[in-house]
Length: 337
Ligand code: AHM
Image (tube, rainbow, N blue to C red):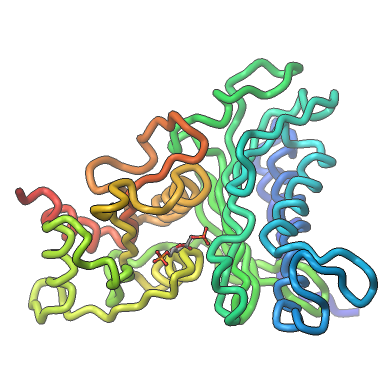
């Protein structure tokens, strides 16, 4: 029988990486496997989202007599379930939950990682068949092993992430994750139900042709941001502008595209919401870690996102992320008074 060894599954890949570190315990690989499993279950439900009229609306009872959960609640429950019953996670923080959830059984209290996630980002796009995603972030605990995880484990600066990743439920389903060793992308092969390495060692192009921002908020942005956006639309020999505007309203899709093709994504503060919309712990930190590992840059307009020391689980931050040279150019505008 011929087995195509050129295709490496997510499990094979993480085990291969473990072999390079003989002292590694395999906990991180276990965590990634658990998240991969939860995402496959979410993927099945996301693909059925258009059948809502047949299967029943959220909150109602479907024809099998089962209660239909909103997809973001379903995704949250799947992630909590696998991580609680796995052997690698001492607790979770979720965009869907007000507070952290600490697992207090013996295995979990001896686990060295905590995980934060946005179970279904861009969920307002589900009804219209636009790509959405799951975003996750992994930290090594700072609290004592053998005892329950504490809030301090979750309120660490992004530069202390051990791993971060996302799953994009798009025209194909992909899991992309980063560790200090680099960024790799895996595409779900529906025929075998496995993620297979499709985008090894992803590097964010230093420049690109696309900028992503909500133009509807233009008059709410600070002057330097407005000037930069206006410059993106002008012909410019140094930048190669005008850039193309692309904004899906689903950050996973927007940043994924820019990571692969080059570009810049912005969610600045507005007059009404000076801290913007996006959450530091669940959305910005994981993407900042991934994009920086791939050679890009992420800031809040003043300092690197990864240097921000969080004080609250659900805090928000202005967010600028993308190709290095485009971010340098933006920084020039933001420095102007
Ligand atoms: P959500 O958590 O309610 O899905 O919101 C997050 C999403 C991001 O994916 C996206 O970049 C942003 O909200 C879009 O917001 P806006 O419609 O204000 O531009």
